[in-house]
Length: 156
Image (tube, rainbow, N blue to C red):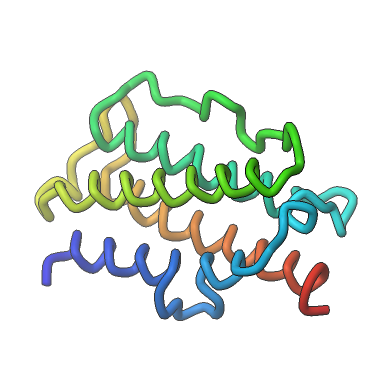
């Protein structure tokens, strides 16, 4: 198994598989309503919805960087876009965006060779390996945040 395949497998498990750290992101989001997703149980923390939008937006930026887009700086909607309207439909769209962004990122990573790991990301001073390790940590970190927010809203 190539290193790229291992990284893709790790991201799949963190996202919706058998995550080593606890609940996968999909498990943490399972059954969350739009109202719960938009809630702020901790005043100074982001909502689950904002974190979901953040993950999806940055996964698009990471994908674009891997594809050579030097203009991929920050998600168009911002770092942690605010929730515009709380509805079942809008929450479903946010979750669909997350799934789409994640799948597109996995496809972009899957197209890489192990040799590409030591090359620099276009217009950046770090390697593809560094970016991919960061993507894994980013996904785990925010999955953990969502799991804790879920505990306070649903399981607690």
